[in-house]
Length: 125
Image 1 (cartoon, rainbow, N blue to C red):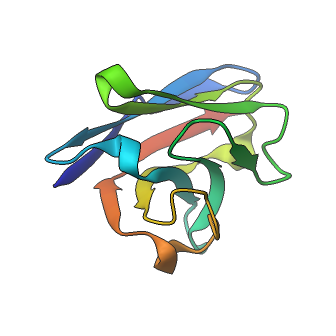
Image 2: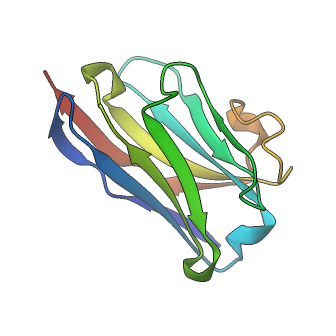
């Protein structure tokens, strides 16, 4: 069972990146998938979640209107499209599998079952 986040990189403020979260060894469709991030010296925070059906999406206020989460069941992959990036978005981004399937407590890292290795996003000013 493995999750792998990818797509990070260095981008200027105002730019865009699309992160991917791919699963192997299990079917993502049974889980809600959350995206978390951890900036240097800060605690990990949940930023977005998509329900197992894909019908419900959630975002923290700091990314609303800029980030879009989506899932492709055929590819067993969840995406996080990040637009209008700001320097404060700089962090290591992780995806995680939420067994509630409905993003019940998507900002709580303790509620997640599986974690992928993170991908670094750096936004320069």
